[in-house]
Length: 411
Image 1 (cartoon, rainbow, N blue to C red):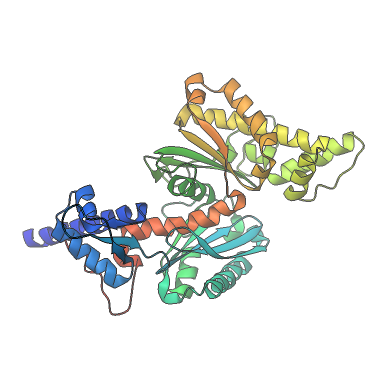
Image 2: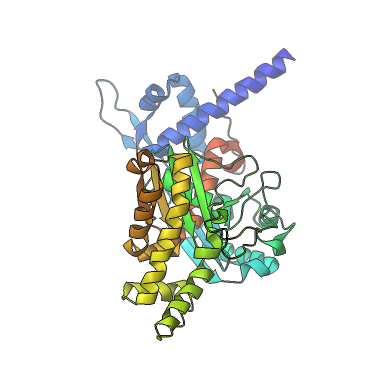
């Protein structure tokens, strides 16, 4: 009994040390084994054994010699960015986007299709498989080098059924296991996560929020979602449904929402609601405008169309009310607003900030930055790939595999 427990503890130490080495190398362009040892507080022999395994695996590579501090010049190590690849899938309400990235988050290939996702789970999954195969082919990322597939969905993901979406939000998808389907097709680990959570993860790891411990990512699309990062990790709540900002009721006499409440943000500033509002305002001004999609609304607003400008002002103020509540409860250091609507820039963000300032506890507002996402609609797919990278760094033996080369994870 004691021997088995000791063996399990040793395995845990080996895994933890390997994870620390990988994360330290990832954070630097180049680093020596001696610097790794000093930074992590590990014996040089421990670092040497781990680095040897990771070099054999093809995850690390040597880049040459560094500057000597008096003895032999140290050999420098770096992550072999292109040795393995990550696939990120964005299953939106009306589209599918798939990217393949290297280990430094550089997109190597991308495919995008408009599709009636909510009503067609079978066709959507077939499309995901097709586009995934396409990006792997375009990027010349062989199946052997594929680490895993991350999938973003416009729905909460219950931690008890981690491969599925919420049947309340997407009833046609009830019982559909996205992860199981893609794992069977591509034979790699698959993780499914809420799209706003993935936006928050991307920002925390790579963009505005690098090195921040707390931030919120607000996705404005067909619905409204909030992804929260606390202490550097996604906060999912007890059942994985934290951050449902779209179901905060702003007006209890407003339109009925699919969740059963009235006046939820989703009913007021979701894409369909905004387009309907813009058309109504244009009609009142006797200047009928089709406003067929969000892109048309944004183009009109940026050109100065009064109905479109007023609609985005309304969206900013309503979102500001919901965001003020979030800031008072969560107190993040940074809020990033994402989704295609961020192309509106200050037409959306100026009224949003003004409303937050009027409805938020002053101490919370004075210490927060509210910024647009630099990626816009690409955040979810790249966040999905980052989800896989995070998981792989925590469990390298499960994700980074080469035939006939077993990762020993030596202490």
